[in-house]
Structures are given as C-alpha cells and as structure tokens.
Length: 281
Image 1 (cartoon, rainbow, N blue to C red):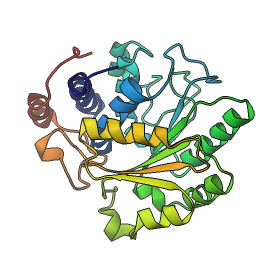
Image 2: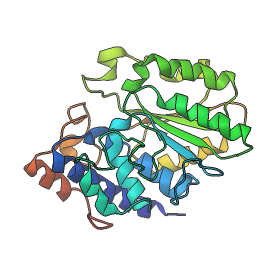
Image 3: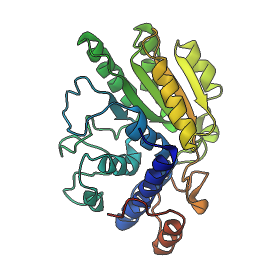
C-alpha cells in the first residue's frame, strides 16, 4: 500500500516523463495524459490487482483498457514505473519501430497492452467482453476502462452502455475523463453531453462522480468505493472531472494542449514546475 505522498511523487515523475516524451518527437497528446495522471497512478499503484509478469490471458488478475488511446504517454510512463518494462524505453516514444507507438498496439508485444486503441469508441465493448469472459471462467477479478469525454460522441459507446446493465456485467468499472475539452473545443460547444450522470443512470449503471479528479486521495477513494460496489448486479461508472494539462500552469484548462508538444522553452518551463522524484529516463 502506497501513501498519498508516495503516489503524488510518482505522479510528478510521470508528468515529467509525459512532457519530455512528446517534446522529443514534437508529437503526441500531453494535455489529456497530464489530466489523467492521478487516475493512472492511483489505479496501478494502489487499487488494481495486476501482475507485472505480463500475460495476455490475465487469469485471476484485474484488467485495464485505455479506450482513448491517444493519451498513451501517461500509460507508458506508469507501466514503466510499475515494472512492466525498463523506463529508459520511454525515450523511444513514437520513433520508428518502437514498441511505444503514439496509440497503443499489440503486435509490438509491449507488456501491459492487451488491445489496440486508436479508433475511439471501442474500449468499453472490449472491457465488457473481457468482463463476461471472466464471469464464464469463474474469475472474480475486475475489468477497468478509461474513456475521453469527446469519445462519448461515438455511437458504439451508447450501445455498450445499454448492453452492460442489461447483461448484469457487475465486474466492470468504466471511467470517463470529464475535462470538457476535445480537439476542436469544449464538449459543450462541439456536442453537449447535457446531464451525463442522469443518462448513464437511466441506462442502469451505478454512477459515481468526483469533481476533484486531480486530487490524489480523492481519486484513490472513489476508485476503492467503485470497487466495493462491484458484484451487486450493476456495472459501475465514474464521472471524473479533471483539468487538461494539470500540473503545469500554462497548460492547464482548455483544449489547446490536446495534441500539441511543448517547444524547448516551454519544456524547460514545465520541468521547472514538476519535481524529479524517481529519476528521469
């Protein structure tokens, strides 16, 4: 069990990794990655039952799917610091023939990755399929998935939202990163979700909501609360309000940093705000 301070130290290093990774290749998605850092750190270092000795079948361990695969930098960093592969491999992000592609893929056989996730809208369906297979196998482990709020404009998401409660997929915890920022503007401007909580509840989910999605202890608490609600006949859904670009003052909020890499001066400015706690790669 990690303390809140330990988790915060890991998060600081993960954010350093993110800005350095996208800067090195002038490509990638730092905003959403930094906004979701608390979620990933809490999940992998405190909440989820997982095994760094990776196997695709994931028998008797929890499984995580990243549906909004463009925020791969945060996932790669957390996997490396959790011991899935050497952190120095982070230096190969988005380079030719790397295992760390811009969107996670499986044919490179990177430990921790069980499904490709570049096309949006598909991750919940994959998570549901895995959760059902675990039920058929008598495996009581939990399946987690993370989704972007812009991704909830995809139709397949809503089919999955109907399917899971109807089939009592109650070993499933899906989270939406609700930062109200997508590539073309705010979600409210592009295609409003209106009352998302009421909609998902109407579909039959057990819904939790956290306004402080960048408060480490609060994120740990809501994930543990969600875990305690599994096995009760309903899938669990978390609305996690975060700030895109959280941790660096000039990157926080808005959609500007959705898919823009910092230049040299901006990188230096960002790193000055992020403590090196675990050693840079």
